[in-house]
Amino acid sequence: MFAVPENTVAAAPAENPLLRHPVRTALEFATDRERWRNVLRYDPDVRFAALLERTAGQEVWLLSWLPGQHTGLHDHGQATGAFTVVTGQLRETVTRRSLDGRVLTQVHTPSAGQSRVFGPGYLHEVRNDGPDPAVSVHVYRTGRTMQSYQLDPLTGPVRD
Image 1: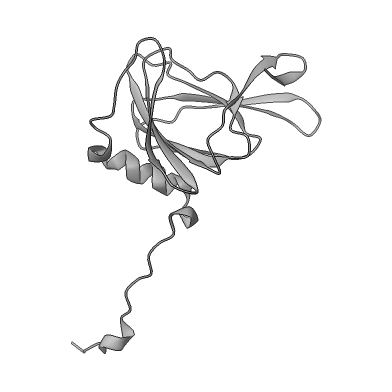
Image 2: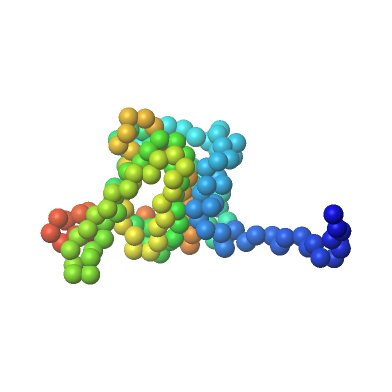
């Protein structure tokens, strides 16, 4: 055993939340159910969303998804962020153009504990295709916007 002089152990500097990856923030909120347990609702008519935290640089939202509820194809403008599935499973369909102009789609099915990341120009649709309700936590940096699109099979995404 040996002693460590007191002056060599400094308190860790406070972490800047905006330097944390948004997935870490989403996971932190997802696992801390006491922060949002009393806020969670399920609405049979529309997808439920509640703002959990807003700071100068980010917003954290709680969403619930009953079977069949979805976002429609959209982007988040210049925002970056992530979402984490708390319970259930969601289907994310990402739409983009290839370098040669073809319209490409990718489907991801994150389930409880899994996350997806997005940035400027990222077009996706998120939906609950399963038989059970789902809950997710979303983190948006540089503002939460949602611009809707329609998918033309020949020309690709067209902004509404």
